[in-house]
Amino acid sequence: MRWTDINDIAIELCDAHPDVNPLAINFVDLRNWVISLDDFDDDPDRCGEKLLEGIQMAWIEEAS
Image 1 (tube, rainbow, N blue to C red):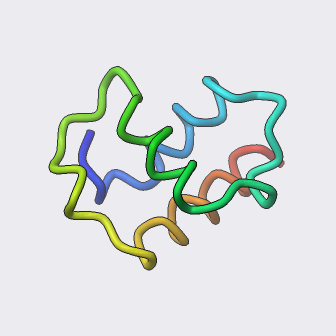
Image 2 (cartoon, one colour):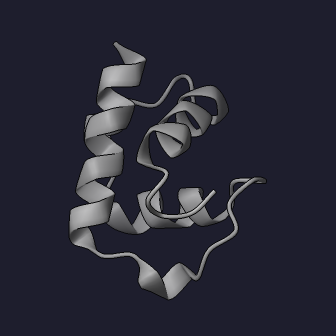
C-alpha cells in the first residue's frame, strides 16, 4: 500500500484497531500506525496533513 491507497489503509486500520475511535487519534499516532501496517510500502516522509485527514475520514466511514 501507498499513501494514496486511502480506502485500503482505512480498512487495515479498522481491522488492526477495532476498539479505537478514529476521531480520537492524533495525526502523529495515525501516521505511525499507517507506517507500521504490514502491507504498507511507501516513503514515510511523503505524507502530509491532507493525506492523514483523508485516511482519518475514510477510517471513520469504514468504522461506522
